[in-house]
Length: 405
Image (cartoon, rainbow, N blue to C red):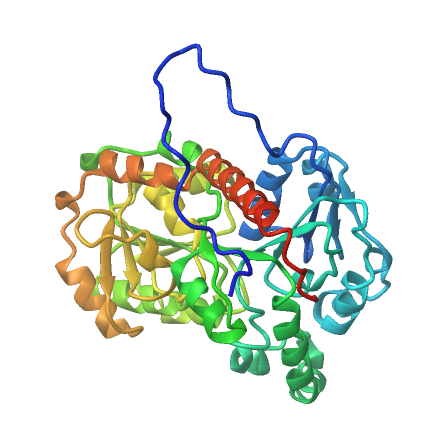
């Protein structure tokens, strides 16, 4: 559980006078550090980018960062030994190396440390004098909810056969470490109601939901009116658990136009499953992605994801989402307003949903307005308010004896 539960909202203003003094920003002057598992690319990295906008002077500690992300984060990235590791596959997949690195970082010079983590970064050791807030993207997948999937596809290519017994041998001690690491932050924030339940299940902790930032604006500009929309679209990395195959099979069966964006190890199999109504575009530019999302009648989201950035981008383009009724989609798909659900993760269930899908019943402009609650601006405002309250709650309880971490 959170050590200091946050209750209630901000106090109501007592006066409407324009001469009222501007409230003091409690975050100004804080010595802040940001910590992240690795900076390669994805939704988690965008959380770090927005935290950087909140705290532009804060150093960002991570096990590995690409040149692109070093530049995007204005040279604030701090790495160590693993950045220069000669075997990148070991740096990426062997968790004990990252555990070793993160647990040896010192944060004695900081008042506030924010870890952004779906793996080992949450396990940093922060002194009692500092506040540690963890933005947990998910309990570590390869220990918990997707362990069996990682056993089938460890990600070591031709060395998968060697990785499987290693993962099987290490998973129990690594789970114990991961559980203990999840107890170290003072507060936990997460990206969806689904992940909050996973955090309670695996870590015995509560977490406040603050949805991750999504680049809504560029998709809204690409939105078309209903009369100019056609077909369906899906955009995803093509791996088995994303279940792109369900969209390909269902649209092929119904002979509905489907545009498939993305690439991955499942690509060849998907092409074999596809009928004549399915078009594969592969990887596309941001401009093409926005155009495709803004011109489709619906976006198909058949996977179970922790949150799901791309379907929210589709909402930003005014496009309703046809989603499997599970995971992060439960937070933004409102049946009849922003999309529809299908109940079972099968092609048959998706076919039934597509049969009943009525695109003319959706208000595309209203869908795009709804998506504004997932904007980067909204994320920064929510995080600012949450951190301010966490600091206040911690100061109120500072007379109590600190708990060991």
